[in-house]
Amino acid sequence: MKNSRWSFLFSPYVVMLLITAMYIAKVFAKVGIGNWVNSPVLTGDGLHNLSDIVEAVLVIMSVYISRLPKSDNYPFGRKNVESLMVLAIGLSMFGLTLQIISKSSIGILQFFPEADTWIRGYLELPTYEPLLMGPDYFWWVFGVTAGSVALSGIMGTYQIRVGKERNHPSLIADGQETYSDGRIETTTLVGILSEYYFQAPWIEYILGLGVAALVAKTGCEMFLRGWRALLQRSIGKETEDKIKEIALRVEGVSAVDKLITFSVGSSAICIITVISRARANMIKHIRRTTEDRLSRYLKEASFSGSEIYVRLQMPDPSFYRVAEAITKEDGNLSVAGSLSTATHIRVYDIEREKPVRATDEPITGLTLEDVVKLLKRKRVTTFSIFFEDPTLEQAVVGAGINFHLAPIAKVLADSAF
Image: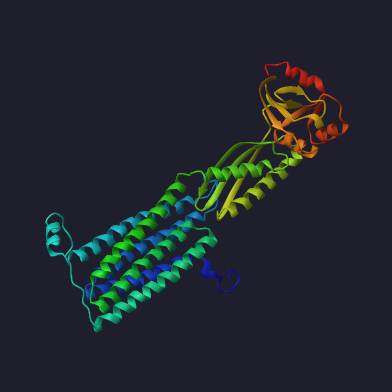
């Protein structure tokens, strides 16, 4: 569709201009017919469409602002203005909820005169005007209401599709509200049909209260989504743990030092600092590989877009790790004579040339390749064993790890451990 002559229909501006035109037509039709037959729900729905027109204009403005290029002052662009629009539309839906509840309650009170009189003694409520019913009114009311339901469904689907395709959350949010308009209009349509079939206008007001609950739910969800985006809330611990796991799998990355994530609109922003001893000619490869893998993962995690910022830094020269092969049997501990007799790899953390902690990693059943991968994953810089083993030495040195015999293990074994 993008490459056809109809591609202009996927422009956010064209979408919102068509939506605005639709709402203008609805306002004139609903308010005109509603005043004619004294239908508070139809008239109120038409007046609500006035706010939809204002929101449509604001969405056009937010789309324009959000598409402005990045700059030094706005390194992530200006897409959070759309999150502000999502929050504002969510708030407006709370106001719509109160409006529907008010009109429906006043209609219901007409069937309980004593309660209506008592409440009006404490509250100033609008005057109730009875509905005009009959064949002279039915087809006008039915035509306007049924047509509005169809338009809301079609245009709401259209907005959401273009919003997702072009990554504009405010367009998606406005499309969701257009769907909510369709729910209200469906209730109005059911009420009209019920009024004429059962001669029971009160059904319209009962259904109105049910729709108010649906609109309130949608408004709450939209408000929370916009609020979280404005506060730049983390995209979640589970997602961040997966990001770290993916980064650690990149060749040359030994650790993740810092990770900051948040969302801007429906896009994920990821700022990650990794530790690497890689040479200068490998830095570009590490950065590009990390960006590509994280971008693919975030897309699979349902983010419409992502921006990945990878920073590399060398490990702290005052901190490093060494390891030795050990054997644990029946509570006894000894330095292993060879890798085949070792049950664990003991990893020592060295700070300012002093061992500060040690952890034992089980290796029973692991192949030589698995042991080397373990040493790399633990960021071990030097590995020692009691006897010479040319095959082991070749594999360890080939992985960029220093290889030593027993003396280094003995020194550490005589330490506080």
